[in-house]
Image 1 (cartoon, rainbow, N blue to C red):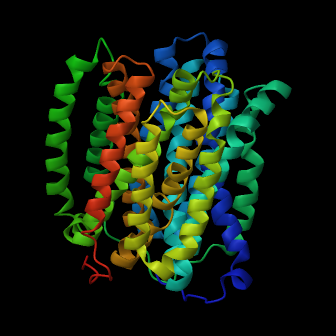
Image 2: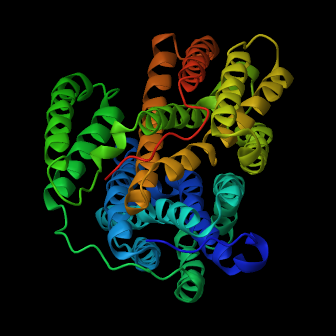
Length: 459
């Protein structure tokens, strides 16, 4: 798929930018908005804490699995139909959630919603690579990261306001008018495919293996801390992941149009990028427990804990937008080094819990800037530059999958480290000290990236 790049982004492509970023914002907003609704949903459907966690786990699982499939379909059929289908699926899931008569219907609806969400961001990123000239891509990809930051700023207060004024149903019904606008505008401005659709058979074996592999991986990560199932299931799930991964590599190496193009991993630059994306996801996921650290170390009440993260969230938006603008000038390698350096410094300072709340707020600034930079445009820019055009969306989808896996591992490992150290302020301090060490390791790994583009791999 090839579309002529236009140099004047603002004048020529404003409607397209609105469509792409409104879709990404809608999907990101749902991720941010669900947190405050969890207690209300638990009470409304009469389920326990462990069961209500399925609301998050099912969405993550189907989003991950859908990412690979939608990216493959986008490369085969074109960006426009897959993007619009993903938005439609997300809207359908949102409507069914609001209409759910029981908890299990809600879970099925969350699966549908997650499947739609999985196709939105990688397809939008692929459109950026198709349409915009190289010198404009950094800014556009940075804006995608900033869109996530904006969603996380607006999500929690918006959810609380809707639930207070109306009911929890409206935090999902809100997606319907947004999706309608995207569908109407997208049908007009999304680029049409200029090459013939791929006629090779759909990789059904790859779809089944990828879904099963990711399901085992998500279950293993999310249940490793389960006091009843963790130690029983985890060794078997680890074995299953290893076997399924070997099978997936074998199958995908032999099909004409694979769901997961193994050729991408033969490019050293791309392979390092996906490993760094896992680290970026870990750095982003590590912010989850900063509010808990604030309550345990500094006496912040649970109701006010979210407010102490506002400096970090604002800095994340600044890091995404500013990092995107600097990307073309400084290069992806330099920006990634800067991002992981800020994360290592910020989490290292956060680990020092004896200097008071103001020091914690100060430490959250480099954390926010670092998160904004590493999950912004730099990694996606490398994937666009290095991947063949025919598998550009697949390359972007793998960034999403790697980042999500890193986020899940962060949530599981930090809580385990904190609990192992007593669960108090000192426990979280030790956990964040180890996070800082890991971010420093990612910084050192980034030094292995090429300063210039390497040759594009053949597919």
